[in-house]
Length: 345
Image 1 (cartoon, rainbow, N blue to C red):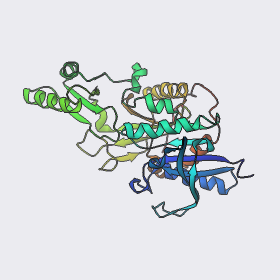
Image 2 (cartoon, rainbow, N blue to C red):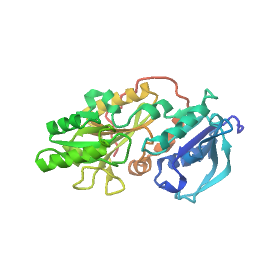
Image 3 (cartoon, rainbow, N blue to C red):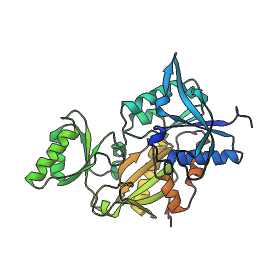
Image 4 (cartoon, rainbow, N blue to C red):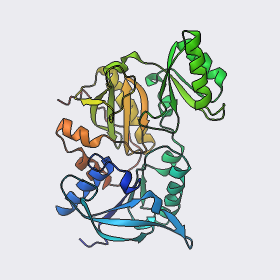
């Protein structure tokens, strides 16, 4: 098949030097895309640095590197590029916008430019949809599914936040625009010293009541870990259990957190079905969702990760399944199939 007929897939990530190349999910997916190319799949794989997205002389451009080869190990030097040249977004069929939070102006402005440039080609798909990436908040997306959401409040008003915290006795503070446990704090409200500390933290986190935050019920079962559910086109692709470092209420995979094989209980299966339906309704093709005791504690539709360690743990080529699905266009809103009693062991 000619180069013109091949599907062209662009991966947009943070700057190259900032990536954890052997573990990075985007680079693992690019590697698998190239393997499929080598087996005859009509596909061309490109990457660009988010900083290269720009408008020049009325044209939206990015500096696209076409991938030619990936050497074993996926180090920063393991990627060989065939061509490097400016391209307009509408040149591509799929644009995977996978820069990491914070979701701030540095995140939104390149996305807006790509959206503008992609409009010239009605078949160009930005994944996940630019509207979702720009307007969907990962921290309170779960409130769409109230039956599977722990009690929480989202506000910049100290009085509202303090009232909720006092009623709970223990709560978890999360910034609305961050990820990977950044800015997450455990707030306790029993003693006068704890209340004063919590109030001071909230003042800082809300930037003197100008920035909303989420305050969520502390779920004690975090000590047993949380289920990471990875979804592909509204269907549950795989799940693992993330276990925190002993004594920690945060799960940081770079600081002592571990992964374990797991199975979903009936409550978690119900949550997975509801999540899958929601994702399908909003055309969210790639997402990772965390559950504690069957309740949603976090959405990730900006750059769902952990695919590489999940593959190693489950001994399953998840990246291939993702790429094969992305080769097909979104075919419309549909309900997710029930995942059933899924076991990975």
